[in-house]
Amino acid sequence: MVKFAQIKGFLFDLDGVIANTSAYHSKAWHQLADELGVTWTEDLGNQLKGVGRMDSLNLILKYGHKENVYTEDEKVKYAEEKNENYLKLLNGLDKSEILPGMEDFIKDLSAHHYLISLASSSKNSPLVLEKLDLRKYFDEKVDPATLKHGKPDPEIYTRAAESLKLKPEECIGLEDASAGVTSINGSGAISVGIGDPTVLKDADINFNNTSEVTLANIEKAMDNKKVLNK
Ligand code: G6P
Ligand code: MG
Image (cartoon, rainbow, N blue to C red; front, side, top):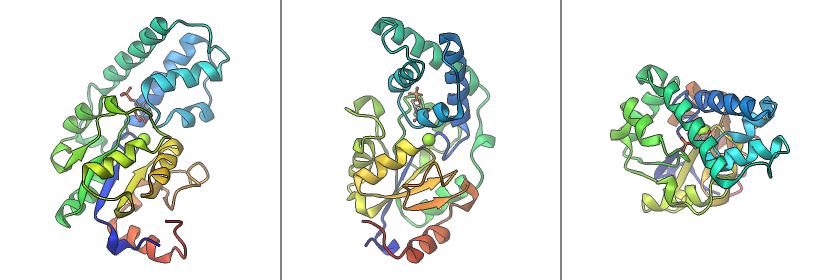
């Protein structure tokens, strides 16, 4: 059983954990789903969270029973269109859209000399971190373009731990998406799920929102947990 004292690193998802940008991804995907004639539902929105760009488009098409309708080139065009709309939504992004408590939490980790790596599927993550002025706190990041498999596969969290030269068991991963929690769990790191605990039921530790995410609350949650399956 992993103890809080053994933790040396933190692995962060970005969209929906550090910033409110998950809502912008959803908005841009919703727009594209409408254009493709696929009915948008909350369930579809949850399935897409944390999932990479092309995988997300394929999930939307599958959801609307249109998986064989478009060529690869057409799909690339639609994915680019979504990204252009997403980038427009990012235009005014600044520090005010850092989710409650997250800047203080990241600063606290840094002050306590924890290592920090980014495990976001988003190719726009460097831009987002720059706009939020948080880039300086990250020791390492995984480039999602180099991954063989996206979330829910464990690869991104395994690589994020490796980037810090740590074992996954020495790390805590933070996620707002079910696919992301599955990815953390598969890597062997401790998973913190932030958001609806029924959606994030597989997380080792659950918080309802980012304001609850503090080192003290994580330590308390790990100590209270009788058996962490790792
Ligand atoms: C994150 C978001 C997803 C998004 C994915 C790819 O994981 O949670 O909603 O689809 O990144 O983002 P990108 O910016 O590369 O299209
Ligand atoms: Mg996320």
